[in-house]
Amino acid sequence: MHIPDGLISPQTYLPALALAAPLWWWAGREFGRRVGDEALPRLAVFTALAFVLSSLMLPLPGGTSGHAIGVGLLALIFGPWVAFLGYTLVLLLQALVMGAGGITSLPVNALAMGFVGAWTAYLLFRLLGPLQAEFAVFVAVMISILLSALLVALVLGLQPLVAQAPDGSPRFFPFGWSVTLPAILLPHLFIGLAEAALTVVIWRHARKRRWLPAPVSSTA
Amino acid sequence: MPLSHPFRLGLYLTAVVAVTLIHQPAVLLVLLAGILLLCGEGRGALALSAARPVIWILLLISAGYLLMGWLTEQAVLAALALINLRVLVIALLTAWMVRDTDLDLALARWPRARRWLVVVRGQMLLFRRLVQDYRQAQKSRASVPPTLRQRYLGSAAIGLAALDKGVHNAELVTLAMRSRGALDE
Image (cartoon, rainbow over all chains, first blue to last red; front, side):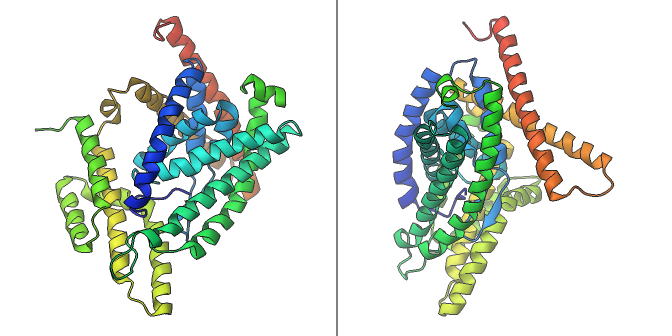
């Protein structure tokens, strides 16, 4: 669900940057506190996995693309702050290496998928984990993807309202919410189901290999 | 005089932001032509690699908006030209920057970010290699293409194997670095 460069206005990406910058700074602090040198390679492996998962893209009529995200998995294993920072790196690499997403749209993409996606998955897992761990992983990832997709759809649909030429024609993304909401949310319903199932498989594997941090393992 | 890599990165970031402030299709067209002229040899391949990731999204947006304009009898061509040109100019700038800028050198002042980038890139190469190996092995052993179910099962197996191999490999590298005093402990 990356938004490419050139489709969102400075009226959108500048406030998003103002919001994301202190969150990146804080996440960097948390990263330094929580991730030691011995955990960095494992984090890199899961960051690369998130990169691979979110690189298989399908263009959607809503002006973006449909793909798995992988941030839920990062959040469940490394916590939401590290996942947010890791996913920002994924988005940056995708923008530079593959031309997917973009630099001006990075703060919006990072907030929608990295921050909201990671925190939603993490908090829902904490809430539902005591009931049944695998069910909690499935629901947490599914809801986190839908919430991220909703935010992307809202941001894109906002563009014709905030950036118009004097004659009323759009200067950036041209469709409103009546198009973006169904065009982005409906495909992500199916993508969310697939990614949630995939995350359960990988999470089960990570638990078997004892890669999960102690509190998450004990929830299982 | 060749520009330093951090300077190129800074120049690129400034240019990308500046392009989003331009709302005249003619200016964007001149910019597009100027970039193609300045980027030197291999401009065809560069233009192709820049257009490939955005072309389907642009086609979908353009087709949808043209249809909407036709149904509501509104003039949409100028707005479409502006949107398409802006996306293409930024995509071309990004492809040019990636081709001519060494990110390792550009990030030299941020060693932790540089190290993370290097490790992630290494893992991506490892994953890509494993997927290629798997596909070639599967192709060489089957006379007909795999069914969707076989592809899903195969992908799951290779995914988990790649994960194991990636973690094992990364931990080995860390142990080797620590034993040689490279982690500064």
